[in-house]
Image (cartoon, rainbow, N blue to C red; front, side, top):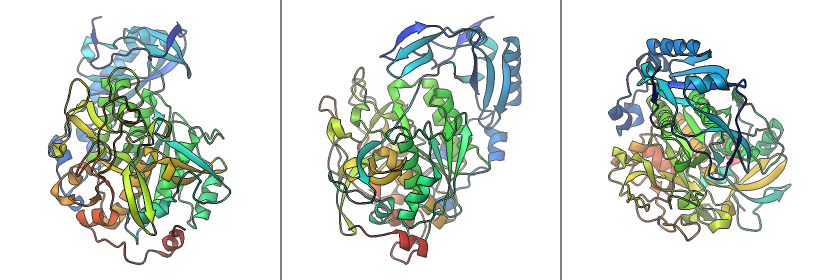
Length: 549
């Protein structure tokens, strides 16, 4: 049988890992095969800067019929599986995936790849070196193969500030805010609470408890939102350690839920692997039961750590979301312009925020006087406190809707003018962070992890007010329709260590805070709604929006 290398699939061991053997050939694993679409999405339709009321999102049924996997291609993969002793455990036409189960030995032969065990500081993972191969008759049919390698691919984009003890109050290192207070400072539309919307949150570890959520929202004088867990190979599993992934899960739910308490929140728990992350995203995008209108993702890793096949697959899933009228908000990273990479390229942007179909969310440091913002600059507390991610993609080309934004050449030797990150920003500095409750502890958290659910909550409010989803927001934000509808941040940079090239803030778009932080009512007006921030909010929102002391 003749095998063909699968484009973009080459892998290498993690830089700090060493080989420690091989997985037992009889060990059973699961792998997902991604197929090409029956017809590609029209790029023009996805990037048109049309008002939400002028758009018509596709139905999930129509999308599956037009852009899903072709049945003959699914049958071809099934025959391939049978021929190699693999079992088909499921397939999804809309997501274009076929899930296979079999032994390590069978998969190694089926994809002409050698799997090994490697050890790094986090433990032992199954990995591979070089490319995956597919039989010649699947060349051009299979776009990606996920699950042969089970290394961790992403980390939460959050930074812990201080513990608050038993009551909410500004902590000693600075001032902190409830999400409600930030919504007021950013002039989020009042009179709406996200009712009728569903916010999807992707999580790759940890969990939440209803006891903590009830305590948190009771303190805010808000009803606890309707929160449900969706298992996608993993489950809601709180660790009890507030310094672990529980912090990410609770931060995401509490920020989105406080901003849009009337919205339903569906938390999709996937495994922290290439396959697990993709499956969780696809489940949220194609979920016809919860039907989310916005997705919040606060996990990621530097582009240099991903394979091209992965970045392409995830970005295509986000493009699918755009076609269905779903906005995808992604944290832009917390380690400055290097994104925490100490070798290789000097600068890295965080993925999946760097996908052209993601609303990349960067970070600021916000200070207020009374009920208004007195100062807002780029978040940069140096190596000890973190800094917003941002820069220029080395993988994704400059999108057409970003061509007039003045994206500079990358500070890397290639000087590639690619996709600029972030698009928008919001308060992220843990010194001016968010008051949250995690594992029975009241604490302050920051990081761009908080900005993604903050924007997701805002988008739920906009969707409710407009009566239609805003969907893929980027082309509108960069066009004349939304000009001046954000708070432009012009001071600061994201060089966290002083050793790599940094990007500086300035008028207009920049690679630190994007187009700026939210001006909720201004954005609502620009998108065709009526700004109601000066009107009386619903009673439950009025009770919850306490003024800062």
